[in-house]
Image 1 (cartoon, rainbow, N blue to C red):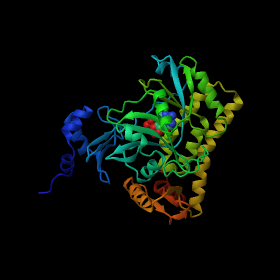
Image 2 (cartoon, helix red, strand yellow):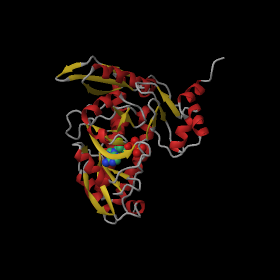
Image 3 (cartoon, rainbow, N blue to C red):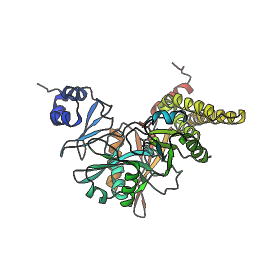
Image 4 (cartoon, rainbow, N blue to C red):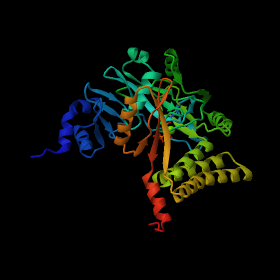
Length: 389
Ligand code: ATP
Ligand code: MG
């Protein structure tokens, strides 16, 4: 008789141990495996990943099987839509808040797994490219002394296969730490202690703008965001210096519009989820900043352009017989990493074409074309005369 797939998976996991360590009832763990909320991922290091949060355990939490290890997911950061009284009401027990730059890249947790450094992406996958970069950029020193800590940070730069950005004057890819947490509990370190530790190991931290009185923070933050001007700096993350309360994020209109421009180029793949919250952010910011008619007009024009122009570009491209793709690039030392990354994207369900690697000074540059089928098919069918249903 064929055995149920989920019972085979359940046998791979020490359910009793996980239940004790993470304080989740055993039946919730087995149920989650059956419903595929807790997913098995085969790889160099086999693991279970939480696809969604369960019983207070964050999505993206990884349970490694052999040797057994747990790395908690990176928690969601709520967003303030208005600074005043948003900040003061979120941090009622703090005298001051620390304000750090919110960098725009992708979230990575670097941890020691089975005596080797692994780069985990937000969803709880070990990404082969991120792992190669983490080994280069972070090295082992930190983990020799702190094997039970996780470095959480943003991978930023043009050689990013997930969120490529050229706004920071970074040549390839850099790792900026914004949190140090305990592997098993996810407990974060206070801001100053964390920044000192990062410095000690010669690693990079995200920029700290300063610590401000909670009551005055909204004015300072508005100044910081306005100070970004036309540049595409994303925004700030406001933190309890002791990290007892959850941080809060606040972003600029320029980066909001940049996100929309990106999403609407692939409108049928991303557009919907992007649209509504981003319009709300613009409206609240406009009111809080008490904008003049001219400023409001400018904001409306920017928002409209960010939505329509990329869609028009996509429709024209399709009309001319082009393909709807996004080109990203990775820079690897070892060609194996590129091959493993190709496999990884397949696992994530991303359809991508990898160009032939180009030899560079100390490695290879590989261009990758990600295909957006939903946008491509929808646009094509409408251009053929089909109706929007
Ligand atoms: P979330 O699930 O937290 O809402 P999201 O995918 O919507 O995340 P963002 O809107 O980019 O992501 O905001 C949160 C992310 O910002 C974090 O997951 C982290 O990767 C990133 N980030 C960048 N700079 C910082 C910083 N200084 N402190 C904390 N997080 C930062
Ligand atoms: Mg982000």
